[in-house]
Length: 457
Image 1: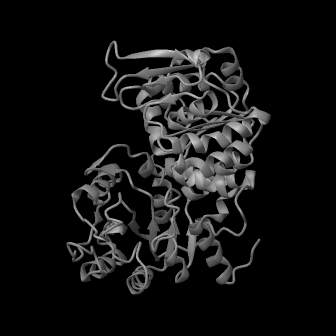
Image 2 (image 1 turned 120 degrees about the vertical axis):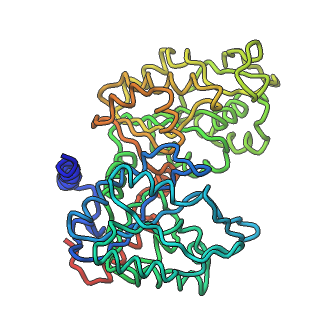
């Protein structure tokens, strides 16, 4: 039964690619690869471990189709992923411990698939991480070829000194990885930075895009070339990190709803007020957006917001709802930590939400975990638009959706009107660039296909 389910899911992906024709013909696909009897090195984005615990296995589950396909076609899988940020950017020190190891991921896969994945031990320098591959890795490869083990899961790629480094250790790590395998598959859409395990490896062995990578690109095309009216909902905790993607989305969208610091900075810039925690730098950056919107009027203002005296919690008597109609230049406010649900009953807001044909959400509207009513009201209102294609990007956005609307989440898992991206940062970067094919790891796959001399259909 499990095998049939996986085969059916793979067939659906293949049919979708064939029907929609949205994937570039320059992109090498796993369907084109000869995997029989081959050692297949697969890069996933299983970065779901926080302090040694898996908070949400969604990203792992989305890659099961690719993993099963490799085994079904006779391939022998070697898996790898990064976990967290074990490297201190200031000192260069790499900290390797249980909190950022792949062990919880391997334990999850063992339970889910009843397959024993071997994690080889490598010599760890307490300051510099892992310099190379150990003999245990090569012994495991031999056992994998002889089918004595079901698969190998390499240690956290960011434990390796060369993964994010430069010079000898980077070049050496790329060669060592390529020597392990016959074929490379990238199914790590959320890992868009050009590191050794996502980029350099493609210079040495035949390389292909996995099913999740294909699916993410296909749906990303629906954001970049949306059916209209197109509504985008964007929030963030820092204004400066969202400026590039925000303007790219603003140019593309018919309507834009803001949340979090983005909305607070916008309100300060437009109405001449001050909100606690919003810097003059953020307000200055938001003024350009306010001036741009005077003519285009794409931004849909949420009329009711929640002010709090403290960020320590939702404490009775210390928070209240404000109406933006009451703003006067020079007014000073406490922390604005949520959108009041009544905003999503406002006639203008509701009209925009219910009449959109494409909705893209990369937003948590409130300060979690205490102020969540705004996000819940947003998700429930969006669901009332039964015809729109609704796409959610980012781990925080998805986690909040699942926590606040568990019944709704379960009911729409198989809906073709919803899609949940596995990499929010990748989506925003691709939107800013105007195409997923400008992402370095994807470019590397296409260059590998071109250099291999394969004909482009």
